[in-house]
Amino acid sequence: MTEVPATTTTTRGLHPGLTRRQISMMGLGGAIGAGLFVGSGQAIGIAGPAVLISYLVAGAIVVLVMAMLAEMVAARPSSGAFSSYAQKAMGRSAGSAVGWLYWIQLIVVIAAEATGAAGIVAGWIPAVPAWVWVLVFVAALTAVNLFGVRNYGRFEFWFAAIKVAAIILFLIVGVCAIIGLFPGVPATGIGNLVDHGGFAPQGITGIAAALLIVVFAFGGTEVVAIAAAESDDPSRNIRRIVREVMVRIIVFYIGSIFVIVAVLPWNAPEVLDGPFSAVLATLRVPGVDLVMSLIVVVALLSAMNANIYGASRMAFSLGERGLAPLASTRTSDKGVPYVAVLASVAFGFVTVALNWAFPDVILPALLNVVGSTLLVIWTATTIAQIVLRRRADRAGEEMPMRMWGFPWLSWLCLVLLVAVIALAMIDPAARTQLLLTLALTAVLLVVARLTRGVSRPGVVRE
Figure 1: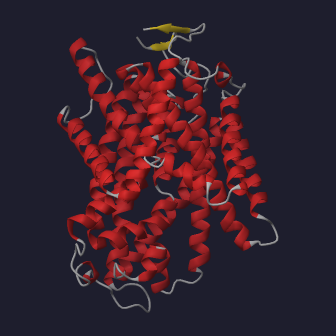
Figure 2: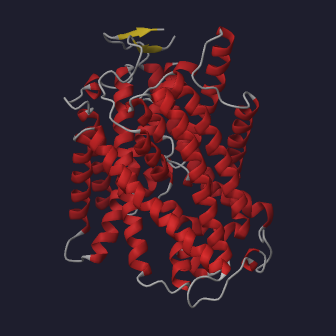
């Protein structure tokens, strides 16, 4: 039997304060990060222009996962989102493992983002050591999250807006270069898509290998499922939010990658180092390195801000369901789970300190352990949606939103996720990462089982 709060919602201490536009931009900002601006070069180097297929497949998976989340959020808004739905569908242990896995991933990524942003800024101002910048970033974004969800929403909206504006400007510049409208640069056309070994120079193997990199680039979109619970009308808002996020992410990702592989040969060395910078440098755009460094810093701080938010809300939800210490449910007058915020930031900061004490050891190891968390969360979300939707259909429940193409598209998503997991098991580096994540998941499941008998007032057995 599973344990759930005696109340009908898991957001009783939180105050609705996020607008639909803010949550929509949060979803976009979560997906458009340093992985796209810098990491996409590695995927292009593996698959060539056919990396577009890898992005289309990964995009299809994220669209289906978002649609499934939207159905569940509309029926039962929760700050625990996929963790709450995994618990409702598969039991207390599953909900606990998914929630804690997500929280652990976020605090590790918070440390990585703070370290990365500090390293870039310290390069601009060598007189100020990197650790000072880490303190500044951590303190500033902790304050943003403690001052209320409205304040957080405004900051994250503008963080995301900068990244979205950069992508739109890049697409405009790229299209102009392709058709010959960029001043002083002859039209590149689209010959680069086939001129250097063909469209798929590495064949299906390259497309599959790139998929392993690409699929993780879409991580971060799931924050909209958490944030929707703090909007004024979650059931109605989530439908429009998910539709907007899905369409724009696909356009931005596919559009950006198309511009890169059309303007430059896929095997050009500079593409691997930084594809966006390489395109702009080819077009002789002044100050390219500084502009891209600024955008990457904004991307890192935006993701860090969103991860502090996501981690704190997940900890809050786990506490409400009796799966985390009761203190994590304490909220301020502004409806902020301040203990959960401070705990999430503190653990992230400890990770940063350990990384400095043991350079190139602690953080890479932790990132390896949580590297495949997204696959576990998406798979759990898919299974939960299939179970809960069938359960609702059998009971004849009215649902505010129903995912289209059920059950076929839900099963297709599960098959695609299993295929990605199978690919990861073939690749040595990805296999190590996946096995470490699965081992951590197994440990969390065991801990959840061992603490199954622990209960407290306000939590009842379902």
